[in-house]
Length: 447
Image (cartoon, rainbow, N blue to C red; front, side, top):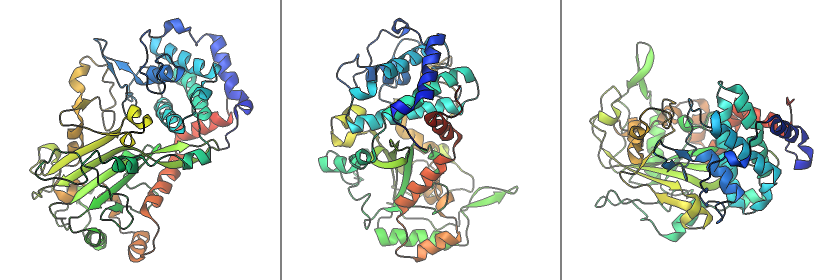
């Protein structure tokens, strides 16, 4: 995708102007009078704060605001927010105000620009993924695309973005390892990314990302495993699983749905992790990975209860074998350069979940407050089977393809993190939402 400077983006800007003249852009008087959270600038009236708040903040029936610093926008498949009524008019007005005032010049901090682009890109993908209300979506999409383009960083700026996980480790704010005597104490492994360390990045070395269920293309998801005996034991265990004649699932009525209990089990004390890191679009139109960590989920197996052939998940006999931990990016902490912006989620902390839901909008249902879920319990909903059977990515990295065997036997094989990054980006390039973003950015198909 060839990205052009603002002076060459006339088709997109012309469309935005035409829509404004047509009347879809309402005056600022239609916008919520409440000040936006001061995330990107201390002034709550700053246009970046206003634009972000307009797209991210949701209100419950009693007026309580949610999503101020949510990792992802509170938007679901069936959401009508931002597509109808005042919320739609306000969104258009905020985006038009940003564009008319050349607000991309108002914030120069590369980290803030990267996160702002990340957030608007998520809203764009949500808008582009729906089929209903096509006119309203077409009104949002070019505006979002233009703001995303304007705040893009240069390749040099992207390369200079900080490693926020390393920054969090350097602050020594969190325990460095799991403490079985204090199993609720959050910990950050300092050697998680060390190439020769005890943690092994799990890769299927295939065209699909290994953690495909989590795929968005706006982030890379890296799965890691650590057996208590260290790196060599972990590598040996993974090789044994891959070389085994046992498949991860058994057939039931010709469908692979039964857990294969003959799989070699890992020992008590094994840990697994899932890291999510930002991918940005630079001003040359390239998808580029960063070390801006959005979240880290950790699971520690303090017991291995024998499983059953059927998936048991939350109510199964092994559902309490693990201790769950999660860290998430907090924008204020990140921009203040404090602990890499990572904060620990605590037991009982709740949220309106958007990942792996039925697509119904929590704020547009009759009883939204009943749909909040405990953050640390959500991993349990998919990862509670016995030991290795709870590691869902095994369905990818256990594939015994020739490529995998070759990589297992080659001590100098390609770095799995680089492989996963390339697979994620290649997969994203073929997604219809990204192709639409490319067309809008290049000014194709606009009238």
